[in-house]
Every structure is written in C-alpha cells, then in structure tokens.
Amino acid sequence: MTTETSAREQGLAERAYLTLRKAILEHELAPGTRLSVPNVAERLGVSRSPAREAIARIAYEGLAHFEPHKGAVVADLDAESLLEIYEVREALEGLACRLASQRMGADDVAGLRELVAEHTAAVEAGDVELHYDLDMRFHARVRELAGNTRLTAQLELLQHQIRLAMYTTHRSPGGMPLAVTEHRRIVDALESGDPVLAEAAGRSHVSRLLRDLSADDDRRRAVLDRRPAS
Amino acid sequence: MTTETSAREQGLAERAYLTLRKAILEHELAPGTRLSVPNVAERLGVSRSPAREAIARIAYEGLAHFEPHKGAVVADLDAESLLEIYEVREALEGLACRLASQRMGADDVAGLRELVAEHTAAVEAGDVELHYDLDMRFHARVRELAGNTRLTAQLELLQHQIRLAMYTTHRSPGGMPLAVTEHRRIVDALESGDPVLAEAAGRSHVSRLLRDLSADDDRRRAVLDRRPAS
DNA sequence: AGCCTTGAAATTACATGCAATCCTTCGTAA
DNA sequence: TTACGAAGGATTGCATGTAATTTCAAGGCT
Image (cartoon, rainbow over all chains, first blue to last red; front, side):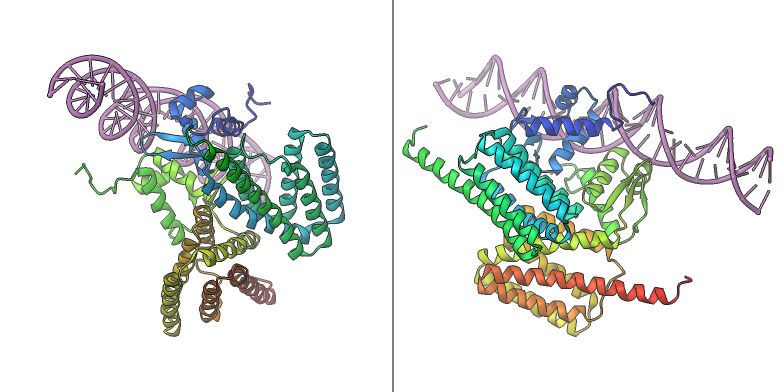
C-alpha cells in the first residue's frame, strides 16, 4: 500500500486532463469558454504545470484550440468542421467494419446482436439516454473487434469532437430507430465475413448520419430565413 | 521591428519540437534513443519547460512513446504497428483521392501531371533522393487538393511515422517505377472525376506499398532462417 | 456623443527549485 | 565466478518565480 489519498496512481496532469475533458464533453465548459492556465489550475486544485499540460492535450485532441494571446478556447465547431470530421469518420468506420468482419468470431457476432437487442428495447421504450449509450457502445465494440489500436484511437477522438459539437443540437427525431436498423445491417454484414459488404455498411451508416445533420441544418436555416430579424 | 536574434517569432517550445522532430525523422536520433528532458533541453539549448513540451508533442504524434519510469523513447515500430498504420493510411489516402477528384480543377490536374513528369525523369535517371522527394510531394499535393484539414493532418502524421520506421529498411528495388505508374493512374482517376475510381486508385497504391513491405519482410526472414545462428 | 489614450489586470511562455522514485553500477559475500 | 545488496546518479512530475506582451476598461479630450 502506497500513500493514496484519492489518486489512482496516475499523475495530476492525467487526472486534470480527464476532469477537464469530462467537463468539456458534458458542456459544463461550453464551446467558446476560455481555458486560461491559472484559471484551470485553480478550478482543478492543481498547480499551473499539470494544468498547462492538460490544456495542451485537450487542444491536441481537437477539443480546444489556441487563439493568439488569448490562450485555449473550447472548440466551437462550425458546419464545415463537422463535415470534415464526418468525412474522415466515414472512411475510418468503414475500415473498422472491414477489419472486424475479417477478425471476428461467432461469439463476437453474438455479443453484438445482444447489444443491438438491448438497443432495440431502449428505442422502443423511448429511452434517449440509453439509446446514446448503446449507440456509443456498439461503435466502441466494433472498433475494438477491428483490432487496430491507431484506428481505435482516431475514432475515439472523432467521437469526442462530434459529441462536443452536437451536445444539444442536431438530434433528428427519426434517427433512433434508423440507427438500430443500420446497426443490425452492420452486424449482418460483419457476420457474412464479406469485408466489402461490411465496409459499405459501416460507411453508409456514417454517411446517413451526416446527411441527417445537413438536413437538420437546412431546416433550421429555412426557419431562420423566414424571420430575418432575429 | 521587434527584438529578434534569430527566432522567427515562434516560441522556444515550437522550435524545439521542430528541431527534435527533424532529428528523429533523419535518424540522427535513432529509434530506441531515450529522450530525457534534461538531455534534450541541453542539446537544444533551452530550459526544461519547452523541452518537456516538445517531447510530449513528439510522443502525441507517435514518434516516441513513454516507457514507465524511463521517459520518452524514440519509437521503434514493429511490423504489426506498420501494418496498422498502413491499414489506416489506405483508407485515408483513398478518401483523399475521392475528395480531390470532386474538388479539383483542370489546372490542378495539370499541376499533378507536371509533378509526375518530373518524377518519371527522376526515376529514369535513377535519382533515389529526388524520387522520395517527389513521391512525398505528390501525396502532399493530393491531400491538399482534398481540402480537408483533419484528413491532411492525419495523413501527415502517418507519413512521419512511416518515414521513421522505414528510414533505411524496406526499399524494394522495383518500387520506384511502379510508384510513378501508380501515381499516373491516380491522376487519371482524379481527372475522370469519378470518386469511386479515384478512391480505388489511391487505396490500391497504398495497399501495394504494404504488400511490397510484407514481401520484403518475408524475404528477409527467409534469409535469416537459413542461418539460425546469428 | 464619440474617439483616443493611458493604466491596470491578466495571460503566456520560460526558467528553475525540489522531493520522490527508479535504474544502474559497483562492491561484497557466498 | 555468480548472486545479492547498497549507494549513487538520474529522471520525472509538480510547484512557483518572473518578464514580456496583450487585452480590457475607464476616463479624459475633442
């Protein structure tokens, strides 16, 4: 037993990073918020060194960016950035499915089916929170099965960026059941063992998400255009 | 005019990072070399703060990794890591070609053709250095034309990692003319404006590079197997 | 009333002190 | 000769001092 007040044997910088990231992803620190080193340090109860390191890492991961002479600011991703992110994600999610289809076993398929079943139930019950959770878990499981650590890391980064950008906005109502259907189709493709089919399934799922996003945007813009005076 | 000894108005940490990266990519600091903070600081003539930051960034970018209680070590990528990297690169390079094919104009095609022409000449002249240079420039140009900043950043990271891993090893002799042929095919596909074709061309180029790599490995292994006592 | 100037507060970036921890090496004993 | 142990050296991680620079705001001037 070593001395351990409440630290899980990880550095202060690491914990500061995790805390900060959580706060950002949950919009406790909304996009646009300035992350000054002394401020973050005090907030997290650490000195400036680990605070600075945590902020740097947040920025490296695309959750904040540095503005000259102003320090880091929580990222406020515009539509074009989101498009970029989805373009990359489509390719990588497709790759994940392709790899998974080649490396996965029967029990893995069963595990995914179970997840989809839970998901179906959650959606039928209208449980939005659980829907998001299961959606994330599904994708996490697929990339895990792909067995490519770099790919996994990238997809997780993109996931975080998307979560940050869409915390409140962009929730198309019909999306929940559609997601489940598409996930089921992905599992079918994975089970078939056909890498081309699997990749196509993964990609079309992501590209559909993007299309819905754009559609939402258009709808929103149309509404705003009707009342030009805000 | 501000006071400016020789710094180009960028921080010490930034310059330390660039210097360090260059040293690593040129194998001045070979894979396996330990990057201790005091050591790097002294080497670059800066204090420990910017040195530490530079090392952290190098590690974030996959050019080094932290070993517990030993600090950062220049990455020594094994075959499996390279495979992972190439898997991701194949997908992203395909995406780059797809996007470029949709966004590029006639003059852009002309620019690429010029590059390929230069490249052809270099290969015919047997200029290996120039070959590498033009190869890199070709890919850089394509991702630039794709117009997706995240994609560009990712591909550059992968490029660096690959360069580090293959500094001396892995140079298949027939690769040079093949690369030119494939680049030409990519330009043809890009010019056609068919995104599917373009993506396929980009992907198959990368996957061929990977196949050659594996073939080289096998050959090398075979040679070693013949003389089990090293 | 609006613009400019000046001052104050805050921030970054860098340097450096310091304790805890770990690896390494050298000496010693079996 | 080999295994063990202890001391030394080095490194990390964190804390904090400090100068330069910039932003922000208030007040005065036109």
